[in-house]
Length: 124
Image (tube, rainbow, N blue to C red; front, side):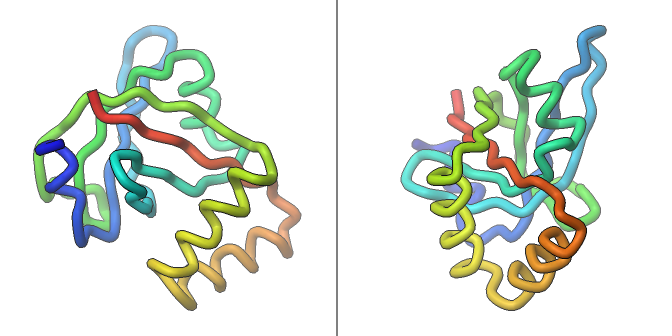
């Protein structure tokens, strides 16, 4: 899929989720690409998870850590997953891509006892 090519070798993507009133909320996040699917690691209580559970239609684009565009917006369908198998699978992919950075931030999350969720993104 041509739209996926712009995410290759990128460290961050900007995901735009939508509030009930239709207002978009943009958030830069770490991600991994697995085949034709993008996966995001996040806190289970994050606003983007709540918005995705309400409306799975999102937009994504490669970005800098600050959310500055590095490509074009692409429509996608998002599913929030919190099953242990999904979390463990994505954790392994994140460790491979981000190494010590991921281990450090994931460790902080465990110290804070925060629950994790993953977002599965399928581009339209």
